Image (cartoon, rainbow, N blue to C red; front, side, top):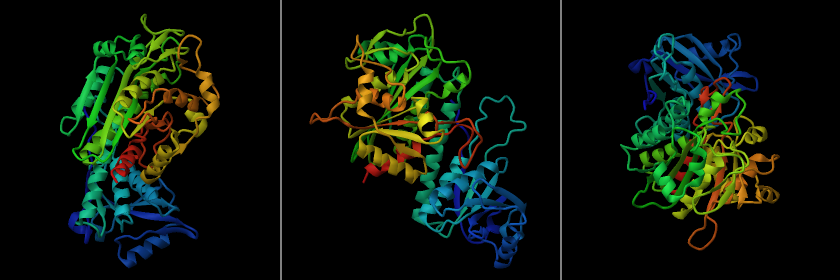
Length: 500
């Protein structure tokens, strides 16, 4: 399966005329008294002239604002672009400004970012934003005529150029960009291209050059070993389900993190059919599996000394003649039974199998990622993911999200929600209380988290990315329309924190 083109990142310093580019990007902040030109490579005279012209040019410094001006010889570019840095002086504002500029300059070959990058943190943020902003999904176009290709090369102007720290920061940014963008590619694929078998193949192909072991359960092995959740959800489709295990196990691992991802390659709702409106978005219901796959691959590429095992629970939920019915009872891997009251609550069923399988290896922590509930959007909106589970893990994930520049918020699993999942004919039902549905779904998943060697429950958290994983609005910052790659950067940041 083809991947999108990858941007080249490099650092430069000194006279920019020695490495000319198409556009030089300079930052503008929203100051209390008006727009303020950020530190830049212009001569004092040119910078003063530009500063006095900002207001009359309509430049405010707001995030996502980009103004193009004629270039000046001293910068070695035909165009200067003024990028808004917003009012906050933090890494995320810089990441977003760099990503927004590179995204909006699509169709340009080489861009020089002359933004404030005096520290490794600032350089890393700008490089990452650039890598995330240089993305487009054109794979299924018969002609590229009229389409703007992403920026091919980004040069980052910093006095740190040539240092070991700068090289490491840019290398990590490139890896992050590569795997976020591959996540986006997978989520953007149409369901006739990405289905359980082809998704498993894509995972295997992506891991070929990395120290990663991939194991695939086909429908026969799933049946033999009793993975009733994945099999039950996939029964109605002509394309049988898959379970994929992606294992990165460095020799001197300091911890073991298991990741479980929901991989519904298309969700019709099954017999409990969804309304037709916006059903085309249901190709994105495998975003969780794409995210955990790429988190494991990124950790392997960066040689993080933490064992990472990703479990991709993949099925297509169709209303075929053999599809599971409301009131069917299925047996999850490990023996627990579930009464299916609504076949559109299918993600938690495939995840149950994955959580039990992950628990058998007794990792230090299990984190599952899923586009699980519409209730997540009601509670937290389109851009903020919900985190539920053990308080310590949830808070660590929130800290990792803050460091990565992603919006996540811890939510409780109220004790009164679990009894609403009781069934009269099975161990539990797959739906419960409608109000607080995001948290009810988390209560269901928690039932399948196993115990460690001492008999204590394995540390666990659930991340619901139903809203943040797919952007139906306008592009913003480094975030494109449609697939976003949300949560991968948080997972990688969390895994890296486990190394210490």
